[in-house]
Length: 171
Image (cartoon, rainbow, N blue to C red; front, side, top):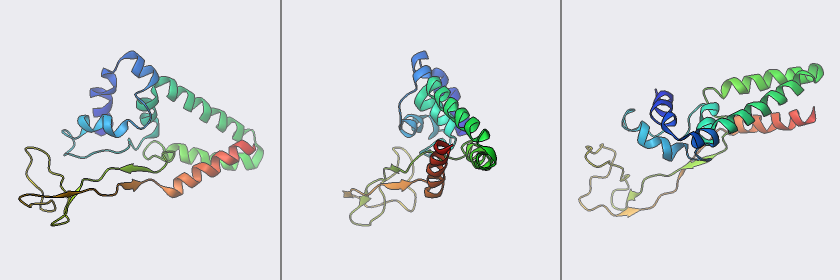
């Protein structure tokens, strides 16, 4: 899958400094696109859908170590917080489990949309050497107009993350 492609063909081939310190916040999509598009039907993955893997790539081993240390400290504080803290511990453990297949800590981010044709209002997205999709512009001389980006994120999970962070600090 996508995670295997990114780790084996990408991350393992980086320098030791990049492995230790990461490639940079927000680099996931631009860095993984050339790795994943050819092997996954042209799909662009805007996020890893696994917070830990994305932190490893973006912030390195050191960043992942600091994140897990913070999470372990928060879980310990909740465990020691009596029955209320232990109830919140269940919520925290649920969110940590969700983070394995989703991205509850990633705030909203934008995805650039391809320009649209002024004439037919269809996107100009075809890749060189690839046949055009029926939903794409087929005008002989398309005139591009810029578009607004897509915004993605999970407001419910972001709100849960914020509430949990506040509650952890209360204990």
